[in-house]
Length: 426
Image (tube, rainbow, N blue to C red; front, side, top):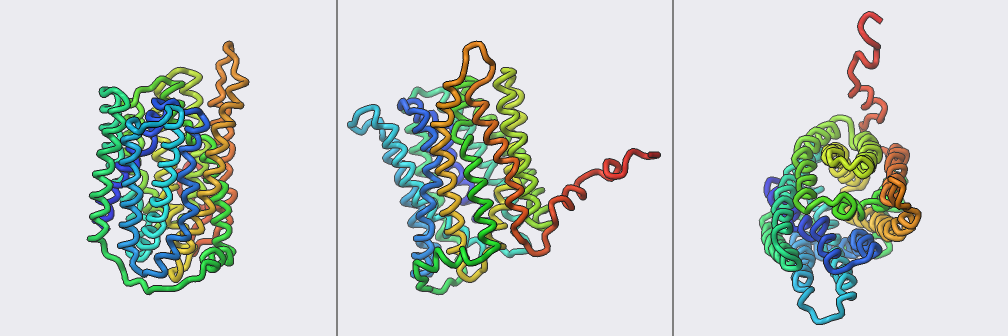
């Protein structure tokens, strides 16, 4: 469990240097269109359709550690090609499209490795401490990602493109290789080889009414999040004129705050269940984040962006570990990998559709922009996502979880006594 925290820190650095502001900046340098920028954020979710086939391989081989390491190594090796993309002889307009394709290929292997890793860690970490462990792990890994973002941001602002992006991606390949090596030191509980028919990989999770309710929530949540998520960093860079260092500082505030919030939410989830935590945090992510982004643009005050970083840590610090644990507790230990694979498949497809629509939607909303108006197409897109995110609790409240509190009971327990009973002397 401790080794997994170290490995997770390395992987987070790899992910931060091959996604987010680094990847968006690389695409902008290559002349990408809004559609390509929206697509590059959504194809990793489309890649999750490969997850069931990873579950099939794991069932046949019964060796999750080796298979996870191989898939992860293939995912990170793809970025060697991306790093040398400017040197490949081809028409300039085709380079962004090729980069999107490379992201898709890398994501297919990464999603497959992630599915196996989830089932693997579900067997390693005792259920009684999952909330606090994954909360702590998420926080520590977030801090590692913060350091990586700050280093990349400072480097990108000081070194000319495309060399700056190439070096960052090249270093990420080296760190990714080191993380793969650590897999071979992980404990892998015995897992029997099971020849699971392909039909059962898809059918068994769908036969569980409770897991179907979780799938419905996952589909809705990933769709509404990806409607706006691909254009948050482009909005920071293009609309708010933030530097890469400022974007890295935003990530650093979120990560450092997240070290506290993920631990707190993890302990809360261990006590009251994951469902209520997911319901509250998705509502917060819906209301707080798009609102602060819009206010920053309208007022021109970047203080709202720093507030959004804290809000990001508060909301996503609960969402990430709680959704992960909710997927584990709603799936049986026997055949868990197939359940996780199905969740990855359907949520990935939903997220891809949302992300693919985000570019055309932004272009449509921007067509209504007027020079004399303070309103931007970005704001309309964020407002649409706000409505969708803040209503996700309606779906998760239908998921059953043993010994879980109701959301209103958790809210009541979190409310100070004098607010519930009125001021003294009333």
